[in-house]
Length: 170
Image (cartoon, rainbow, N blue to C red; front, side, top):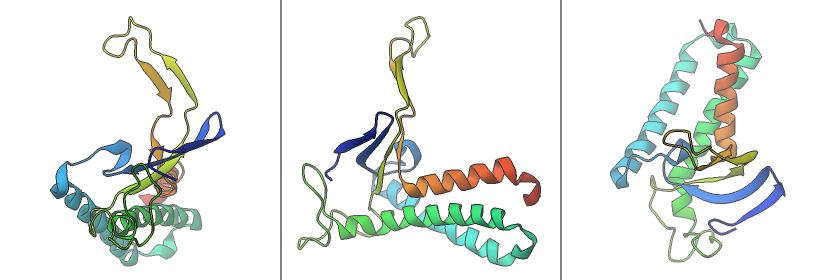
């Protein structure tokens, strides 16, 4: 697929190919330095989390709690791999399908790749009434963010920990 290409599975489920240079919801720290700081911060957090899990007594936690930790860490590592390697392995995908291991090299160097997002669930769209301050007259789509499987793993793991296992973590 090329950047911006999409196909509908259902009206409410679209595979939409986009590349995210930043973090959740396309937020960025800005510039190459911001991208480097974001990537290094992700790596630091994952290394810290893994070290913490090895230090604590994991046997005191139930399997579902450990599965949640695994989802969060697995998703984080998946996004880090995209940041580290995607730009090195693929050329850009503007107006063409990206090639793997192109002769001229990838579109960026290590640490500066983009995370590929592809799941889009526009459940419904509506126009916000004009009398609503600031937002009035604008189109609103629920759920607008485009995300990937790694993002889903992080979200499901974190939300499950908060909703179902808060007492186990104290």
